[in-house]
Image (cartoon, rainbow, N blue to C red; front, side):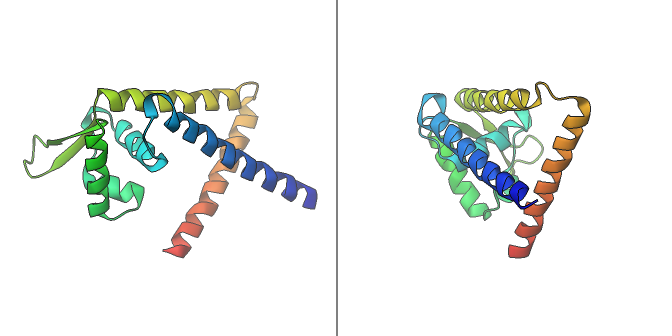
Length: 152
């Protein structure tokens, strides 16, 4: 059983570093050039909301940062041409943040990469193996959630 723990540990560390390397490479070249990983995740979070966008408080909560920091991050991404802020139609005081055309392009390219990764992972798996994989990743996610809660 010790061998299993060592192999799994090595695999998790290796895969984590490879994901980071591939995402950083994406951000160094092509449409994502000039973005940090945190900025890309902000764009992804806003992009997942579609045309409705997000407000700065939602962005701050998702990124686990203070609202003023989220406002600064939004401003930087707006200056880089990836985001646009606009007033909410229902409440003139509220601000909605959506993706520009360039922001949507980067978001779609990033999502395409994620979908290619998922398709590669699921190819050749039967339904039972897919269910096991999902349960294992959920278990790993719960571990991380517990540790996040313990540190806050």
